[in-house]
Amino acid sequence: MRRIVRALIVTVVAGCAGSLPAAAAAQGADAGGQAVSPSSSPAAAAGGQLPTAAPAPAPASSRRVSVTAGVDFVTAYLFRGIYQEDRGLIVPPFVDVGVAVYEGDGALKNVTLNGGTWNSLHSGPSGNQGQGSAWYEADYYGSVSFTIGNWTPGALFTSYTSPNDVFGTIHELAAVLAYDDSASAFPLAPKATIAFELDGQADGGDRKGTYLELGIGPEIALFSAPRYPVTLSVPVKLGLSLKDYYEGPAGSQRFGFFSAGPS
Image 1 (cartoon, rainbow, N blue to C red):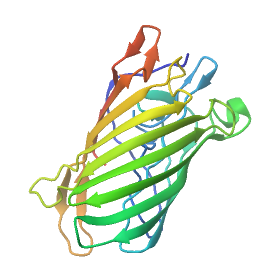
Image 2: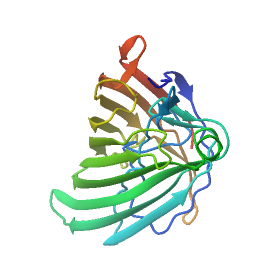
Image 3: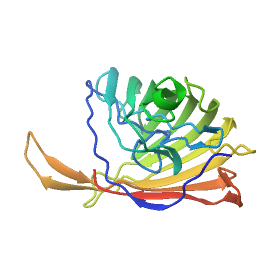
């Protein structure tokens, strides 16, 4: 049974990322993985660790095909409140390819396909130092999303794998729903994700779990320059178990994590 960390956490994420003309912002089966936040990745514990979430597909731009790539340098790695690593160097690179298969002016505005990979390289106990290989995690995902008015429903399949065999492979299917309220005076960008474990368990427990994540991402314009606007984003996320997602010594728990912090 792996360790499960459940806490009220306020995070400030500092990272360095580079990207090519992008198709979308990672959705993360956050669906996806956040490296320094409780909604990020698999955990370490007696006999192994859990997998993490792929950075999820991003919304398509006006380009028919777009590619997004990036890399972060973080100090700790959690997946949906489940501890993965907090020692040594932790580097999660990713790449996402988005294809706009349909664009229209009616109620259905676009249909987008995304596919990509999210990885986590560790120098500490879960990586090079303890396993002889830094490649702790490699996640592969594919998704489809539809923009209907201000709503964007979608489906995401993710395979969480560990090249250095720290945890077993997990297959997950998630439904995602986001709402675009960018035209409002104070946009919140609400989003909900329900994920179903098809094979394997992220908590290392005995039963496949069902996970619910609710989040908002309010943005505040700090400096409105035509070419170089500066905004402050304060993402807030709540992770819960709908069924057996957070199993521990005391049984299955409902609460997983809460995170909030500027980025």
